[in-house]
Image 1 (tube, one colour):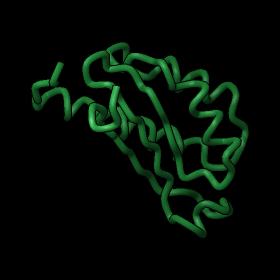
Image 2: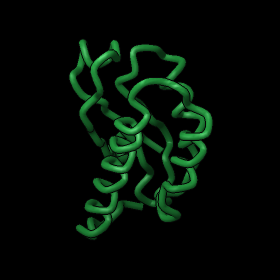
Image 3: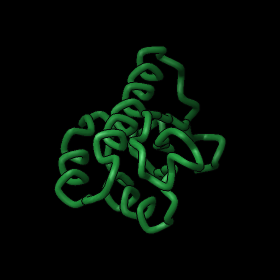
Length: 112
């Protein structure tokens, strides 16, 4: 698969005071790179300050098929993440998923 064959769905939410990321970005951003032929997430990113936290999101989401929703992945995240801004991070994940649903509703043909 070539990079031009994927789509990016991003979501954002406001961060609470006290998070270092708020000072840099003001919001939490989560992005999913998706193969539109399979609807599987092939990469994920976030505006966490540390790579470790972004890598953590990758371990939960990469390989997941968005046709199945994201509630199970969010549940895994919530059970394993103990830090400020958990609600804001989850809201950004849900927003990114909503952007994927908007993309799917547009019925854009996928090149084979």
